[in-house]
Length: 571
Ligand SMILES: [Zn+2]
Image (cartoon, rainbow, N blue to C red; front, top):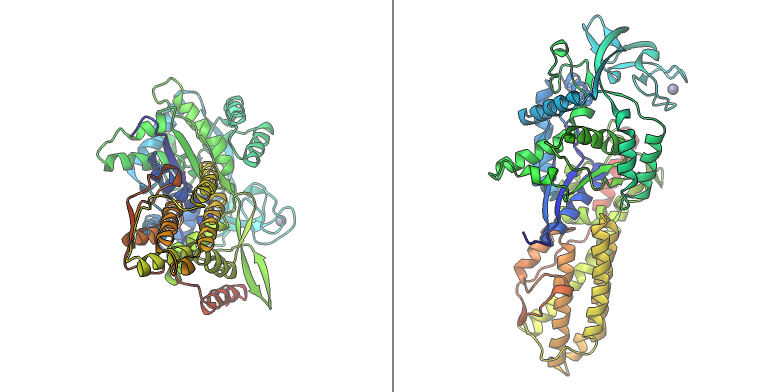
């Protein structure tokens, strides 16, 4: 790596290993990170991109009990399913781990011991629901009852889905076990707590100094800290999770919000081990000039900006484990679905329990990854909630991906193939208008670059489309279908300029539609680079060019819409 290289550690939120991935999750934490990482790699930056499944927590054990499986069976199945889906979609993790590994348990214990010796861990009694018939404490989501606020009968143990109130499970009226339906009672239990309030000042100082953070994220979290942090329980009465290294806590496990984020480190260690440089993970976590960037959905903001940096600060004390703090936490908004209901198109919240969602593995059975990536990238919820719509998918793919970018590649390469035997020599002099076109292109390129480095791939994509329009304009103005009858030299010179722009469009399109750009390499012979860096080559060549993308047909969209409509009707 050169001296000018920037080191990055990029993560995507750890998904719970208890079900398939839907397009909302993908838009929040995975696709934007992947596009960003692919761009950094092309620039030659030093980047490691890690993720993994969150194998612990109540969502996993609930799934296991519902399906009559062990938690381990559930997480192994869904880990493999997710890994395959991410691969098919082209998410290019350097390592995809999971949190039920031994290395992760060791890391969690290590964090715990460090925080304990720093004086940040304490014990306290709390009230918890206990099922005498099941002989165990029940975490909040295992308990249901009548909402103490609105009287809704099927309120969850921690929150009412009807009125949205938050409460403790023991405040429910007639609480009962979600698994057996049997009665539950309140018992005292002892838990370990992390002293988050001790970090209030340091967190405020750290977050206030992050000039590059999204304003919405920064203001939200400063307000949250200002309202007063509380000690957080870090253990639970549950038998699945990382064991707690304390004699009286043998039947308890760490709470996921204590161990999940540590999974990013465990995954980086696994990567370092695999490449045969077991200590290399430290460069990415413990060198202060690393840019550590966590891509997440907005529901994960609080933990990534309070609990997690506080854990890192606590462990870093004393200087032996000098953990750096996150450089940025781009939190994306939510994606809703546009569904055809009773003759109109309505925006609805995705619901995994009603199967009202667009599952990524199913979408990939119908469409290649590239058009899906392109559409999702063009609607990323960077600043506000967005709607996923199959009709919009069709419109954008056909008009922008194909009509603008794909069409440009086709037009240029078919002319070069047909009238120049697939090879264009560099002209002695660039034709009129070429320098102006290049300079227009360079400006767009600079905007693309700055938006991408701001972790805004959706905005960078609109610059890519501007490049396509600019290149199409040059092609149209040079009118090769006309000039080839009068002046082949001029036609060739203009097409040479078109090829230079084509190479640059391909470079900037690669993070979005990587498969198509790989295919393009097989029939386009010329540099795929930024115009700004381009040394004009001696020639451009092409042979066997094929269209890069297939149009999305009405029937395909009608079928996809009908599937959602059936879910709405409960069929
Ligand atoms: Zn309620």
